[in-house]
Structures are given as C-alpha cells and as structure tokens.
Length: 425
Ligand SMILES: [Zn+2]
Image 1 (cartoon, rainbow, N blue to C red):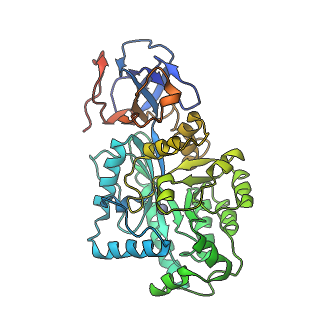
Image 2: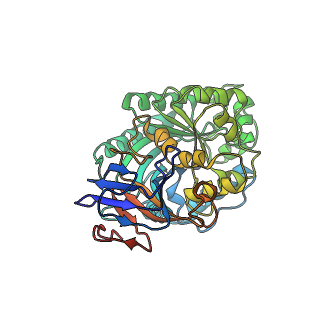
Image 3: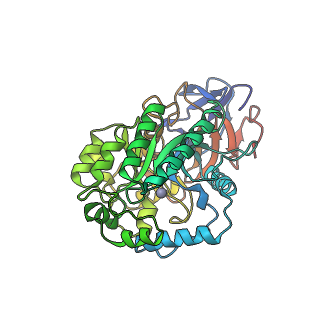
C-alpha cells in the first residue's frame, strides 16, 4: 500500500458499471479508491494505451492442483477422470501450501485480484511477505457415511476460526467459506448441517452441482458409474440419497445460505434455472474451458442471464484447465461469438463476481470511491475501439494492484512516475 495518494491515469478506465471513461484517473489512498476523476486533477502516473478495470475475480478454482502442467486424462467418463485425480494425489507428494502459493502467483500474473479456492486438509494461505490475491477459501466437506459428519464439521469449525483471526480489510488476506463437495459425495443431512452453519456464521457456500448426467442418474435412482466409483473407495451408502432426488433439493438447501455458488450447473433444467434467477443469493459459476474439456452439452449460462440470474466465471483447477487465467476464460467465451455484450462479460469477471462472493455490500469489483483499490491493467490491441476489442486475443492483463499495491507491475510506463509505489515483486 502506498503511504501517499497515488493517481493513475490510462487511455481507458472501465469502472465496472458499463461505462468506458477515456483519459480518466483513479486516485488511491490507504488501499482504497479515493476518487474517480474524469480528467486527472493533479500529477498522475500515465499508464499509456491501456485499460484500468476492476480487479478480476476467479469464482472457482482448486489451487491444490496448481503444480500440474497439463490437465489429467482421460476427460471422460467423468468417474475415470476422478480416478486419475485420486491416483495423482496418492502418487504425488502433497505439499498443499506450495501448490496454493504457486497458483496464487500465477493468478497475480494473469490479473486476478480475488480467488475463490476450494480448501482441503493442509490448506494455508501463502505466508507473508509473499503477495497473493485476496483468497476466499471454501473448506471442502465430504461424507456419505454418518461417521464422517462429526470430524468434517469439526475440521470446518477450525477453518472458520482460523479465518476469523486473519481478517485485515486493507491487506490481501483470506476469508472462509463452506463447501459441501457435491451431491454424490456428501450426505443430504450433512449438506443441511453445513448450510445451517453457513447461516449461523454468515459465510458463503460453494457446491459442485448438476455437473454430469451420471450425477443426475445417481440422484434419480441410485445407479450408474458413481456407484462403482464410490464403492471402490469404500464410501458408498445405498440409502444415503432418497430416490427421485434432483438438483432442486440442493438448490433449496443452498438458498438458505447467505450466499451460495452453484458450481458448474452444466445440466440444470429450465425450472432449476428459474429457481436460481429468483433467488439473488444464488450465483451460477460457469467454468468455460473446463466445461469444454469434459465435452459437456452446451452450458445454460445464457439462459440464466436471460432470466436475470447472476452468472460468474471460474477456471476450475489445472487438473481440467490449461492455466488459472480467468481473463482467458472470458476471451474464450468472446471468441465463440456468444452474442453476450462485452460489458456483461466484464461484469461477470468483476462487479457481479464480487456480489456473488461478498453480497450486495461488496467493497470490491468496481472502480468507485470507497471501494478497495484492487485493479487490473490490460494491454489493448486497438485502443480506439475499446469494447469491440476488449477480449481480443492480444488484449492481456499486464499489471495487478491489490489494496493499492502493485503485485504484478506493468512492464512499461509513460508520463510522470514520481509517485510510483515501491515494487512489490
Ligand atoms: Zn471444482
């Protein structure tokens, strides 16, 4: 954080509300945005033909797999991919803190200022002084069998207590969330207990849901590839899930939480999309390149947007995605000619993602006075046409500020540099 106010100007400032302000300036003081000036009102650092946008938010990842250089195979069937994941975990020495730090560093380089991570045993935030994005660590809970429930809840409560001791609103740190893993791995009673805890503690929830047809089959009639997979692991319980269960049961549970991320939702029905759209505490996390990796049927994200629902983006992990760049997820979507406006895509990465994680009172995700000075700097292939080319392949994050401090420095600066903060890296 800079000790004195910092004024940054760029060819474009995109505050995250649909506007594009040419030549505007952002004034940063004490880690927060003090002012957004349509023209610099004093000496400014000119960042040249770039765009300053709210810091990018990745709403779903598993940093513990950040050491993987390529996604695991086979991608299909999904249960075989899960077997590969478990085999990799068992064959590779697990150093979760190192993997988290590696993934956090990659996220910084790709313009990410906030990450929603799924935390498993051994998770810890990168230790100071290593800079990292803001982390929301959703502690994963697993257990179809009754005897798993007590230990899972105890571990979760320890995670929530650890987070309570770290909160510092002005510095990059981490906060806690709760993650019932998925319908096929968590007993409905444990799901309910976890949501009760989320409500009592006012923390967000994330759950993988409606991810594969095999999951829907298991819920419907307790058959299919998941029975074999879970039996191999010795965790299957035939009476855990009542017959004719659908994702709607879990959506109803998630809606009791203060905020909840419905992760993937690849196979949500029209009724379930209606239900999400009607409940603003629910957000759908679409992971575009992971969705493509697994070869799913077309994702219903635009159907949810059309209903007024909130769609945000995630990278998922390096076990199913080539990298952890949330910007590349949006570029991937833009290249599909989706018909979705670039302003909407940018909001899915910023303002809407902040509301999904932190609620309507979120103080990040926009460039506005009082908000955290979490910003991403983008190179622009064609600065004259900001919206048309915002997500072009040559448009890339080149600088990352968290709390008013550069964590990844822009490579070239022009203009007055007298008020540059000290390099963080
Ligand atoms: Zn995931």
